[in-house]
Length: 243
Ligand SMILES: C[S@@+](CC[C@H](N)C(=O)[O-])C[C@H]1O[C@@H](n2cnc3c(N)ncnc32)[C@H](O)[C@@H]1O
Image (cartoon, rainbow, N blue to C red; front, side, top):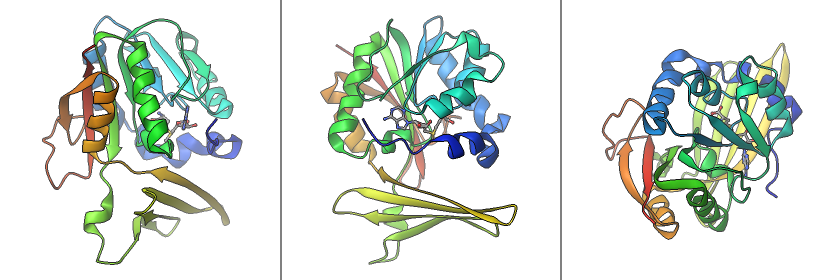
């Protein structure tokens, strides 16, 4: 079982700490995108967390089932209005099977990189394929590694620098791991979070999809369907189950 980095202290503060991600301007385009793909079918969220996307998607009438490693994150979700409509299975989304078949499965906010080996990421694609109806889709939202923007020889990228939050990642090209560190000042106290993430390029994800019997259907740089280009810093990709 992968290590759980989203334990009680992180789970309790998740919505407040990443409040910008809960803004309607961030949530609504993702929910619309996923609702369009789900149609009248069901949706499976891998790493459902505190329900940032699942709850509004469920409010649109889509039946949502979540898989989540952290019982503490699930407890936060289940304390919210509307959570009764969402089934959650506690487990590793690379291997955990749930009942039913789905029109769409989705993995947002860079969460594929929480699986820190290639084998686990491939396993995740295969697990998704086993849950999808024929013609169903798998959607991933994930960042493009910042390596091409780093000065030669540099391995550290600071992604947030404010008086109360320092966030940076250290790239190790040999292992394809970006170790991410956060330091927050909260009420005069220092709070920290560090974890390894396996960064992954779009082409490698396409190959994982192929191994699992899926083919790329769409790739955008955002949920608003802006074009994906060499300058894009993240992507939303949709693979369709073909066999
Ligand atoms: C960055 S949070 C995203 C939560 C939610 N999807 C959102 O958009 O706010 C990543 C979530 O994935 C969960 N997670 C990470 N690795 C997992 C795994 N292997 N299996 C199941 N859940 C996992 C974490 O516990 C955490 O709740």
